[in-house]
Image (cartoon, rainbow, N blue to C red; front, side, top):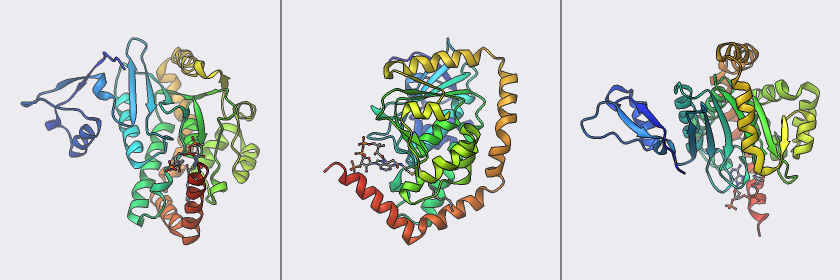
Length: 304
Ligand SMILES: CC/C=C\C/C=C\CCCC/C=C/C(=O)SCCNC(=O)CCNC(=O)[C@H](O)C(C)(C)COP(=O)(O)OP(=O)(O)OC[C@H]1O[C@@H](n2cnc3c(N)ncnc32)[C@H](O)[C@@H]1OP(=O)(O)O
């Protein structure tokens, strides 16, 4: 990946301690003596989230890279939020395409190994990171376009739903949807709210109860995605759409986005701790742990 953009990063000495952890996570290195430091965009490419900025166009492409299936591990979620925050603070960037670096998979959703056989403190930490990812994406001031170049179940679908526009590859093997009930678990209310805001109440009720995974043409019909194109045109189409959205003055578009989305985000913001407690007690139940373990086993056996 050849990247030339230069990003100005303040001296670590001036940053809060968490920012030092962030720098370490992103692999930024400050030279000895350290006033502000210029880092090339290549350094911006962290391990699990690759960011390719195009300052001339005012956009960036963010690619998830957590093989084999881009499951949303704690590490990936943390990097995603950090990378997004950095882009939000970068005055040269107004829009971002979210896509995958893993062939055939946009994201397999939440990492089941983060929700299985761990302790309550881990579940709480993990769920807080999932909430944070959703809130940051859903309320982002940037124009976000999802270039869905592969399967996108559950949490993968949620990421796409936070975007302002969704372009999906036309391969009928790629499916998208909130399939939680198939795993014996329940989509949280804010997943549901995001879906209802996108496809409406009746279609959501059916999709959520049945855990429907829609192939691209059906996803288009129900309004879960906005455009279906051949696989090799997904990213270029997403970039064209981004350019159209960016033709609107930022302040007017951002205020409108906020007006449309804030009430939904506020529902979670008002009860974040209770939502974490609900998740921890739900996921810790023996019956739920058994369901998840059986589901993971089934995924593994599929190969053999
Ligand atoms: C009252 C209620 C209160 C609160 C709510 C409480 C809790 C519920 C909230 C939980 C919300 C959950 C959201 C989620 O996102 S759950 C995850 C759902 N994801 C899925 O169902 C997708 C599962 N995966 C697949 O279907 C396929 O893997 C996929 C993506 C189509 C790709 O298929 P393929 O290319 O054939 O790859 P494999 O299936 O062979 O998988 C390769 C490898 O990856 C492992 N894996 C797959 N998915 C996950 C995952 N999500 N997490 C972790 N690991 C995953 C798979 O087991 C294989 O592993 P191996 O070791 O065999 O290589």
